[in-house]
Image 1 (tube, rainbow, N blue to C red):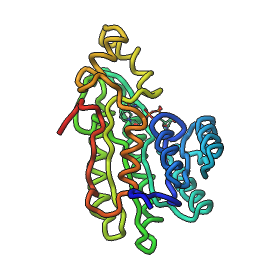
Image 2 (image 1 turned 45 degrees about the vertical axis):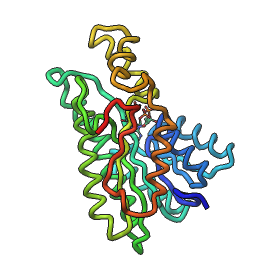
Image 3 (image 1 turned 135 degrees about the vertical axis):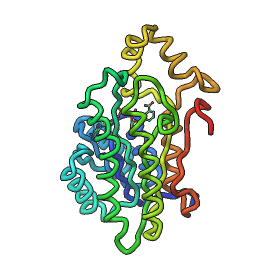
Image 4 (image 1 turned 180 degrees about the vertical axis):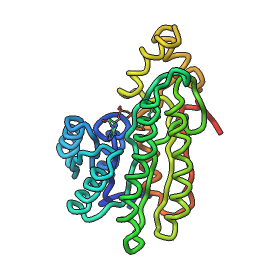
Length: 263
Ligand code: NAD
């Protein structure tokens, strides 16, 4: 048996209908886990489920807006009735919003905090209730960002939200330990997903530079190799945290950024 084994574990991945979450769900499935594609985008979730099934894996889609407590609880209940429990939560669903603080609408600020922070809280709460049963335990992984550690202009609600996830993770690590629950944060640099593709023209416009300059200078300028972080880079770390057997790493965050930010 290999180390970092998650075979037959049940994993809920939010925002798995696209991008990083999709990559994590597929990587978990290849490692033998049963995966739940939790997303508010039905078409994306259905596509990922079909692809996993075609590759021989087990997966279901649950429709969930992570800011809606009833939908989150229903999604976790469906997971439990289908697969018998939940062992791994990857709280990954997220969006981006670009604006300077003095131009930022309250509604956009609140929406960002709702998805990233309230969504993480609601999914954590629902999964902990399952993981605490008989102290069965599990792994809770938050999708932070280099922006959990570092700021960039124009991203106040994102940077605030991602910093906050470090705090939630640390509390869950301390409260969950006696029930064998572990918690971690993954902090990726720029990964070429729809979320990032959307930002390139937006940032070019706001900063008054070309799209190529946004990529080369703003996104990759501080990396050691001028490379985007890949979805697989992030998924491999998600596999490592999910399969890490002891509590030695609980509460910790790991930056995955090709040297953009080193601490
Ligand atoms: P993406 O746009 O490719 O995928 C995000 C998914 O989340 C989509 O399928 C979307 O439908 C879903 N989603 C959005 N709001 C939701 C909600 N309220 N409820 C349920 N699902 C919702 O984006 P991505 O780049 O894969 O981002 C995934 C996570 O990774 C986000 O938390 C993001 O902040 C984080 N992240 C991304 C990068 C990057 O460079 N792409 C870097 C660091 C961190």
